[in-house]
Length: 86
Ligand SMILES: [Zn+2]
Image 1: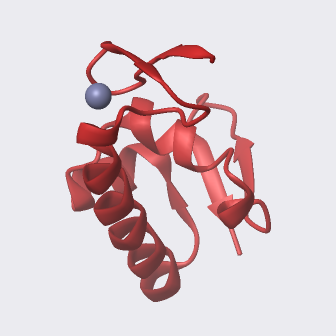
Image 2: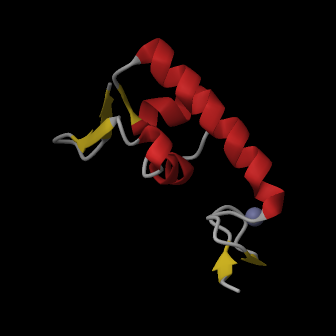
């Protein structure tokens, strides 16, 4: 059994997921919000997405590492903001 620490609430749980079962639904819901936002708006900075969707920048950076969003290029611009290009 792997003991993981939840990326959202910090509690420990037995699973290979990044988040505990309690937070999984919130993750799924935010990822669907993120997907919709990207489909509608395309290129945007992490800061902008966070402001518009209410998803924290920390969580956004985590979602963008998932396979589901691997087709999206996230690049840092000169200001250090992440920019997403479809
Ligand atoms: Zn949690």
